[in-house]
Image (tube, rainbow, N blue to C red):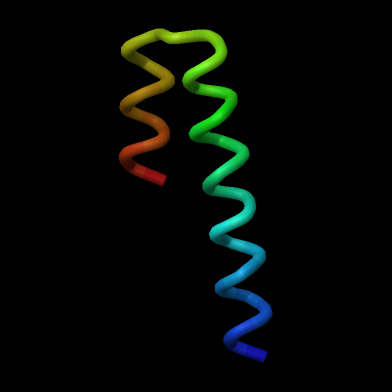
Amino acid sequence: MLAILQRALRARRAVKIIAGLNNFNPDNVVRVVRA
């Protein structure tokens, strides 16, 4: 169970990072770092 949840969180984090890189704003970078 934990492994599945960790994979889901990593995938979600990767999506946020990609989205942040696509529209590069300081606010997005801060959100990605905090998340």
